[in-house]
Length: 233
Image (cartoon, rainbow, N blue to C red):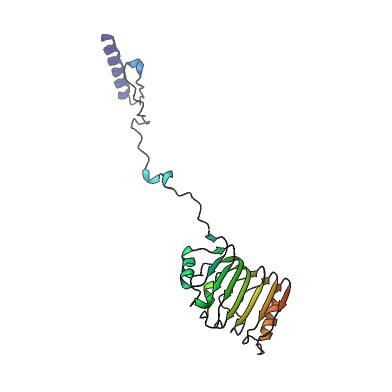
């Protein structure tokens, strides 16, 4: 005990002497000096304990959302819509693509509102009605880009094709008949993969049909009859 106290007193006097000379001394206290080692404290150059990292500059990896963006909703197979409840159910799905056909039976539909997100129909887009059909506007289809085939039939209240401006490609057949359209304004189709048939539209001048046929790439054949005899601008 006497030896330990003598050794400790000598080290303390030695340290005070150097501090008086303006020197900086780093003393490592270890087992050789008979004192415990605290492994949780690390001294900095000036003898202070380093500060904790600023939490504001840290990222908690457990709170970072690294999941990919959700894909567009796709409906597999055919979809048949014949009333407003079914149309609104389709709208609520938020889907933009149908891998099969989309059959819109407009006899009991007041409008096509609910189809605004639709971009692609891989199969047949079939829009048909009867003498009492009230659908007069295709604008809810304004985001539609591509369909497998397109049929607009028995739509006597339909007077124009505005709303189909973005529809650039029909990979199969295009059929328009039994409407009250007076021009093909709004029909943005640039390519029809197979056949195009525009017939029995009494208010649509045949010359407008001929002009459209001539300006559109059509894969196999064209057909038209029963259209109007009016003049084209």
